Amino acid sequence: MTYTFNPNEKLTLDKIQEIIDKKMTLALGDEAKRRIEKCRNYLNQKMETQKEPIYGVTTGFGSLCNISISKEQLSQLQKNLVMSHACGVGDEVPAEVVRLMLLLKAQNFTFGYSGAQLQTVQRLIDCYNDDILPVVYQQGSLGASGDLCPLANLMLPAILGMGDVYWKGRRCDAQEVYKAKGWQPIELQSKEGLALLNGTQFMSSYAVWSLLKARRLSRQADMVLSLSLDAFDGRIEPFYECLHMVRPHKGQLETAAAVRCWLEGSDLIKRHKEHVQDPYSFRCAPQVHGAAKDTIRYVESVVETEINSTTDNPIVLPDEDMVISGGHFHGEPLAMVLDFLAIAVAELGAISERRTYQLIDAKRGLPSFLVAKPGLNSGFMIPQYAAAAIASQSKQLCTPCSVDSIPSSQNQEDLVSMGGNAATKTYRVCENTERILAIELFNAAQALDFRHQEGLKSSPKIEQMVADYRKSVNFVDIDQIMYKHIHASVRFLQDMAM
Image (tube, rainbow, N blue to C red; front, side, top):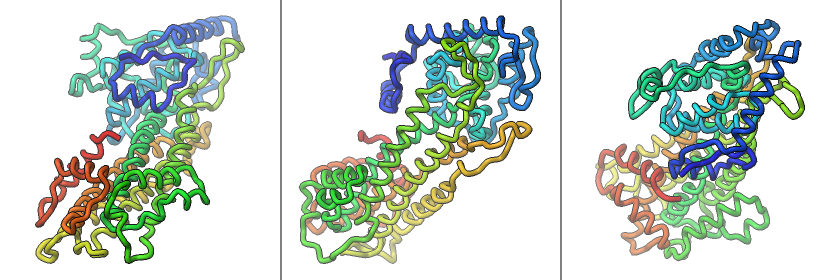
């Protein structure tokens, strides 16, 4: 299957999920090609007729914007830009994010406001389709004049044939791929280096990945909550619809409805309760999970606007006969919502860890540390430690990046977004919360098995889910090596259909 770029159609997160799940290839539609060529032709004509300097087209970059560049040096100027800006350090960007960077950069060009050559855009698509993934590093972007550093590392191999890529399961020099494919480095024309590097595709690719993960984690958090609630012998009243209609936040209503759906037909939830109230981690879960849902929804609206926009600089407007130097590459819109998304997802992890603790605390007929013979066996004592450590790390990561700024480029770029750091930390928080939920699932399934020993069952949906889970993670009767079970629990969440 092929996804065809059409600038008249909005690219949504659901469509991106479909492209990923169905391993679709990419192609340029006729309208996208027309717009790309129209913009490039206009820019060529503009250079011939306009005597005044055009930033980034006939001048240097950043604080060097007042230095004019001769026509003969324009291609070398753009090539130099890519080489000099490829300064990435730190851990490598995960392959799934690099693929998104290629996809979203190509999408950015289809609107016809960047001045890229058609062959340049096609090369990015070819790299995506052939799974040629440039080696990109996580550190280096200020999220200000776009993601200069990581995008330079992306374009160095893809467009110029320099640097390293992953291809056919191994890391190799880009020249090896070029030779095998019969490719030549693309000779960049005026403004193209800026078009390639001035953009928010590093931040937005991480944002897309994190949103897709967060949406899934939100659904799974409701599922694991439902299991824990039943295994803890919790009360269903805090999830009644009539209760939430008097404070009708959408996410709150959705969470309560999801829990009622998961627990429909449960013997445990219907039995008489001796206790009047449950701890907040159960009773207030609709409010906490719901706030996360509403946050995810808001962040999604911002990110979808971003990936359907032109985010480089200057912006070329052929119909208005203008080339305008502005600030569309500034990452503040993404930096702020990425900070917010990290907080929301971290809270899903924080409340999950608290439920895990409640399950091991020898309450409501459950054995201490969820093991039949505590003392000789430590049981589930230390998985909660691990969850607590991970939750603490997520809280530390949630310090907002978007409130920080360090001026750069001789103070020309005097307030930056730090959105690149917001992007990478949000990715880590999403992974952390997945692990915390996996540990809660591990504990809750164990607790439910003790309820089974009392002759009580949860709902058909929960019982089927736990039966599937038990194919990967067994009941722990005496102490075992626990990390293998936790890792299997993570894989279960990753692989299950939601």
